[in-house]
Image (cartoon, rainbow over all chains, first blue to last red; front, side):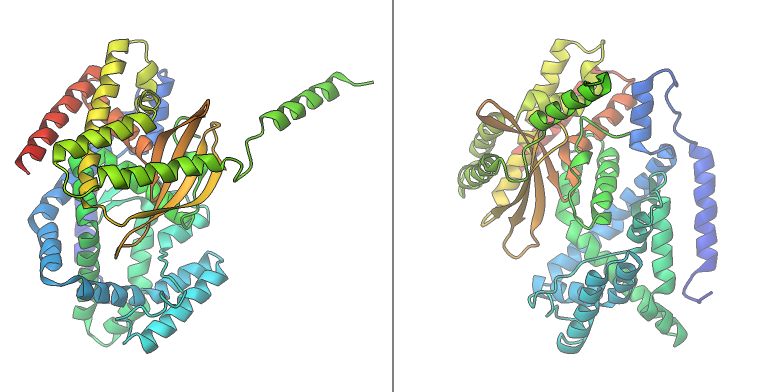
Amino acid sequence: MPTFIPRAALSRIAVSLVSLALVAGCAAPPPADDKEAVAEFEQLNDPLEPMNRAIFEFNQVVDKALLKPVAQGYRHVVPAFGRDRVRDFLNNLRSPIILANDLLQGQPDRAMQTAMRFAFNTGFGAAGLFDVAAPGGLPFHDEDFGQTFAVWGIGEGPYLVLPILGPSNPRDTVGLAAEWLVDPLNLHLDHVGQDWAIWTRAGMYGVDKRERYLDKLDEIERGSLDYYASLRSMYRQIRATEVKNGTVDLKTTPSREKR
Amino acid sequence: MLSRRHLLAAIVSTFALVSSPASAFADPAAGDFITKLADTAMTTVAAKGLSDDERAKRFRTLFIDNFDLPEIGKLVLARHWSAPTTTDEQRTEFVRLFEEIQVLTWARRFKDYSGEKLEILAIEPGTTGDLQVESRIKREKLDPIMVGWRVRKAGAIYRVLDIKVEGASMAQTHRAEYSSVIQANGGTVDGLLAAMRKKITQLQAESKTN
């Protein structure tokens, strides 16, 4: 196991998650004779709701105290031009992962696009600082293992809120772990003993992502009666859209839910 | 001689032909409706130099005229809308409070809009006889957003039932949210209405201090 996996930390988190689940318990399903309530319960797909809400509250505290202020500071200090360079650079570093997932999903055209982007941006875009491929007709698209598993027909499983990382599900969590383990750059950096770079990259990725969501999340929280429930619903809908690579599914509009 | 099964098949297929939804671009008027709605929003609600009250007033007018609020209420409240314990007063009150929250959250967003351009990508028949208008909103310096509009035609009038932003349906999100609130408040619609009133007071107080 590579040294950048904090084994002790991982097992500690796993243990505290399990004990939290035991303490918080599961959401009680509605009585079986109330068919509509049961349908709604299944629709929400959140049997671990008490635990999830507890982790969500914890995340909110960490976000308000640390993540959000850091993202705001980043936006305040670094001009948009600089932030775009950071994003282009990080996106370019993700190329091997995106390429692998394009291939695993059986999308040779998109894989070709990713490979060409990587070559152009690394070669002509100052090692990826400038996305020169997008204006040249090769736009960025993201992929991850969670989406690949979904394409392979693996279900999302129950909704899950991860500490710090936020909304997820077992499928996407495994995908996230897989990505962390097989990323070639991370493996290389670990091999040459430069683990600090792995953590710096992960940190920058987080700050960039949080900065991008600053206004959106504020808006959602402001307009919500139940922020947790709003985010849960949106996460699941948006993930489903991402799996289909943005192809719109007309059948998921409410009033005639399948489940 | 036609067997009964053949006859049935013939009837079914005739019906299927008659009631088959219009083809992908059969109703360009629905696209025109959305284009016009976006244009009007940009020229009236997003106009520069408006007072907050005036902007909210303009948004409300546009919202009421172009969105089918009672139908949206029905979609969002779902099983609680038709529950035998829910009264007409509660339904009316729900739609009123829902409208209020939408005005308070959306009107403000238009303050920052400028130069957004809407482009119609597709108009497709949806599952319930409604039309799904897919659009892309191009923004200055920001990534474009994909917005889907669920549109219902009644006579010659089109009305919006739902908006999907990047794949997340507003109606579905509100439905999940409100059912959570109802559940947390003893399963009663009154609990939801109380929470909505509280939210409105809070939003109004915020917009006064800003």
